[in-house]
Length: 227
Ligand SMILES: *Cc1c(COP(=O)(O)O)cnc(C)c1O
Image 1 (tube, rainbow, N blue to C red):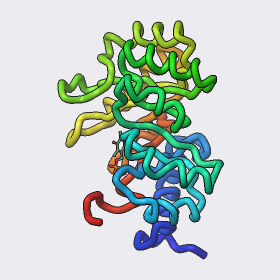
Image 2 (image 1 turned 30 degrees about the vertical axis):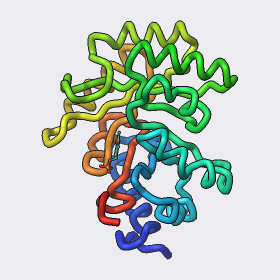
Image 3 (image 1 turned 90 degrees about the horizontal axis):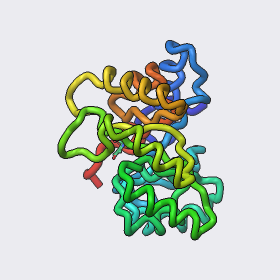
Image 4 (image 1 turned 180 degrees about the vertical axis):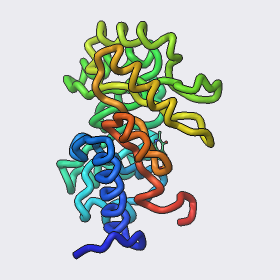
């Protein structure tokens, strides 16, 4: 039996899955309702492959260019992989993003709605999008302002984009729970069921507050910038 040691990729995956199950149990939710996205930004294909071999199929990248360099090959070898874009997207990369990714978590402005709508139409490919909300109203962060959310959702619906839910990155170094709770409330207010929230340091809290998609890098791959 695979022990939940954190020294191997498979061990770290098992460890994270056990923590997901524990948090879901406390929240009286099914762990199957929490999609684990393994955030593989900055990781080479040879670091990613052990995770694929251990059964992980959902991955996240934050840059189109970087993802385009490693994922077409990995996806060709494992066609059931689901690739999520979790980082900011420039409108001029919308075509490339729609071709490469299976979901986008960073829809945050009307110009991007237009670019994605056009790209999805021209490629005949609908991919679900999460609207990223700047939940802590931080000047340096991406995401649409809370006040701008109703209009942006309206624009996306007019454009025919499939809105899967809302996404946020709460402010660093303070208790994230109130921000997760606010995102959940905003989603409920707009009849949206998807909640992309929670990273390595706070995913248990996010699950207790309703996360349906958690984005985990460090807890699966180790600290960034060592290799
Ligand atoms: C890097 C990143 C994550 C994962 O962060 P970890 O703390 O390494 O788990 C999640 N979401 C976004 C948007 C990221 O850029």
